[in-house]
Length: 280
Length: 112
Ligand SMILES: Nc1nc2c(ncn2[C@@H]2O[C@H](COP(=O)(O)OP(=O)(O)O)[C@@H](O)[C@H]2O)c(=O)[nH]1
Ligand SMILES: [Mg+2]
Ligand SMILES: [Zn+2]
Image 1 (cartoon, helix red, strand yellow):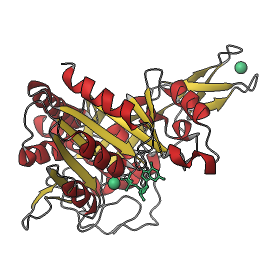
Image 2 (cartoon, helix red, strand yellow):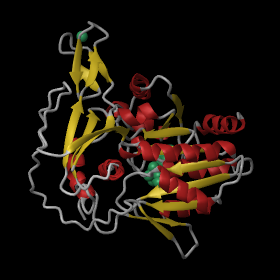
Image 3 (cartoon, rainbow over the protein chains, first blue to last red):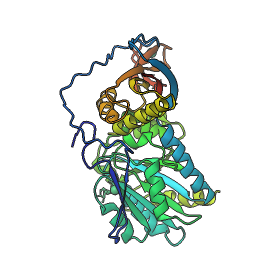
Image 4 (cartoon, rainbow over the protein chains, first blue to last red):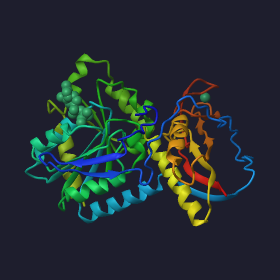
């Protein structure tokens, strides 16, 4: 396996598994690119990084012709995400894409939310994880239908994985679909899944300057949850400073400060979720 | 590393266009990449070679046009190019956030 680019032998295989089921399905992300390549890690790139920013590029390809394209690289993912979004809207399924660093408390928040609201709301969960079924088992234990997408070496969920997972999960109308993305604040920010809102979670054991270090994620989110506030007395984390930084990056951000495990502050989050589901 | 998926998407777009033009081989792919697009250029270059394998783009060159983000100081008005989101104004030392630099686009291909 190659640490640098994350490509190797098995990692282009995505698996979809449900707790208690013995069979699981696969898809291959890279289509016809079955690459069992050996990288020689010491090759030198002849790419010239000293581009001057005027757009004249006199790269002389001795022959050949140039075809203009001007296509957004994310176009295919974005189109599929819009199809997912259309499906969710038609069935009034409120879909949230939860993103954070590993360990910020995504799974804990999902468990508590489902336990608290399952008599009022139908929840469905898609769990993204590189290798294990652990998070899906935790969700299964609190009684929500869940599917685990193992991304192998892939560091994010994409719209096609969600499309596939949703077909297996078959969420009912007027429900809430919670997607726990792979723990990582960089990669998932680029991949629209078709969600109504991206929810970024930061815990107070992380630095309060995280919004400035990962601006793309905070800019692309609508909701910011500051978790583990029960630990505030023990850590050097200034909630006000964190919020100010986050707002500098994204004026629209709406905040919830809570402790997923102890319950403090979760009422406002539950209330928002219920109102948001019934607002359409 | 999402750069592998990005590299595969770039090659897919290029191969599709080349096939539509009935080209035999892709010599080079030109991609515009903003400094704040969330893609590490070195990682993308590394993955690109792998993504081209066993396609008509095998061996193609990746021409990256790297575009800067722009920062305008709200304290003194000084404007400058940057590749970081958070900056210190070179003139007055105030904190300045950058704008733009989100580009991630396949601009053109060169084919035979
Ligand atoms: N003290 C405290 N610990 C928490 C809280 N929320 C989650 N944790 C703990 O943080 C760890 C990681 O939580 P988890 O939900 O698995 O994080 P994930 O990787 O984002 O899904 C676990 O040990 C949780 O018990 C909280 O509000 N307060
Ligand atoms: Mg988890
Ligand atoms: Zn200034």
